[in-house]
Image (cartoon, rainbow, N blue to C red; front, side, top):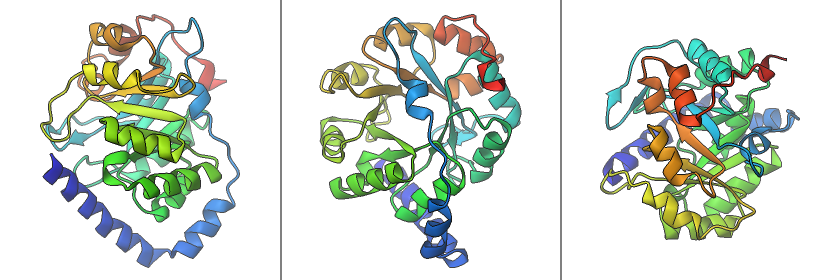
Length: 270
């Protein structure tokens, strides 16, 4: 997986380099700083006492492991997510290995301006932070293992200065040290081992005990049934689920199963 991860990052570096030729860092910075919207992502996924676990449902077209998942209309899927009670939507925008697109995020925000949306990509350059603001992302993903400690801190603080939240993804104790150094307030625990590609929900159980109670904690990867949610839900604010919902014959019922909640959420339409 490390080889795949390196390939993804290298491909993204090429794309960012090409983007900089089209629009300079000075230009995109000025445009991004002119946007004054505030993020609702943190408040949407923070679990209050006695509340059920929150759900970040993901728009995902493919993965480096499974390849293409299935064809579907992004807006129709987003509509199902909202109607089923998802608290936020994650949109993978990485083009080469996940078949994502920034256009997916733009379309969803245009149609659901009040739904908190996470831009999930491989971000390592301040240019991508400004770009995310122009895409109207409420939050971005930062992956600890592809960044140095100082990069984590610098990119996190830049995103926060632009009024975006950050889902800071960790896989082990070393990554957690970067999270603490950067001072992040939302930590995503990825249950997938990036070296072996194996999924172990015990990763969430192990790492959550090392995180202060005032942090919002999200469990990611390998959550496909209610039993998985029941195993990890104590002390967790939210789950991020993509593949199992996308591949389900009935995404709405899959979400209800995961949340054990038959409520249909119309609040975002108001």
